[in-house]
Image (cartoon, rainbow, N blue to C red; front, side, top):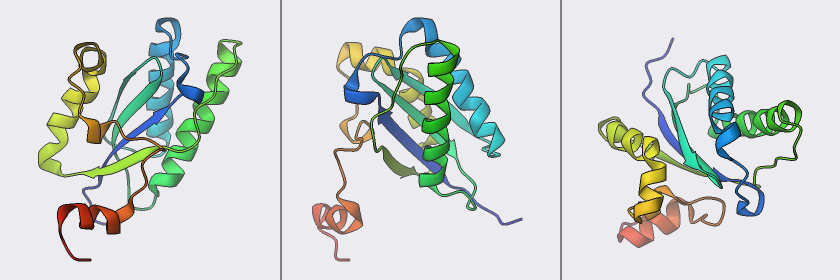
Length: 149
C-alpha cells in the first residue's frame, strides 16, 4: 500500500441551482453520499451545503480519480433521491475541486460544517464556492499568482 495524503474539497450545484436539497431530504442525502464514499474506501468524508449546492471534503485514494469519485457520488445520489423520495432530482453538470493541504483540513471542515451560517451571514469564502463556471486550470492560476509555469 502506498503512503498518501490527498485531500480534496468538492463543490457542486443542483440543476439550475434550484433549491432541491430541502430539509426533509438533506440528512438522507448526506448519509447516502457518506455511504457511497465508504464503498470507495474514503477514510475522511465531511459533507455540508445549503438548498442549492453541496460541499465535500474527502481523502480520496490515489487509485480513484477525482472525476470518478464525483461521477459515482452525483449519479448514485440523483438516482437515490428520485427513487426514495419519488421526486425529480438532478445535479448540475460539472463541479469544482481543489486540493487541500493537510494543515488546512480543519479550516475546510469547519467551513463545510457551517455552510448555512456562512451563507446566511455573507461570510462565504469565494474560492471555496467555485463550481462548474470556473475552469482556469493550473496555467491561469499560475499567471494570477505571478508565477511562471
